[in-house]
Length: 122
Image (cartoon, rainbow, N blue to C red):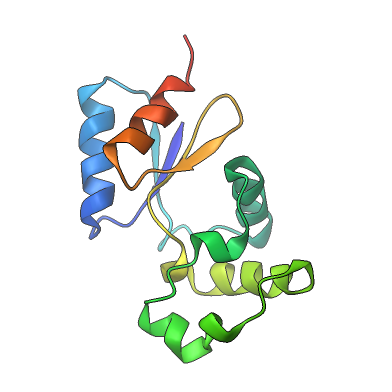
């Protein structure tokens, strides 16, 4: 299990606290420092079952500068979004938890983190 975090994010810290309380075995990835490649973002999107615009923090200053809210949300525009997330990792929703079963969740609630834990198996 890997969790992509921004240490300044309270939701990330809450997720880590819960993972620790449950004795989970996980690796922390500070994705603002260890920036995911476009391929890694595509893989996580596949695991999440989401599109790049679904995990884009559109309220961030960088998102406003790029004008992402105005971007098309369709198959033809998907790569533009993936490239933006790779170039501006602050735009990636957090925390993202990848589970051993090949899935992933955006762990912004206790329920979502518990869902990721339930996918770990034994």
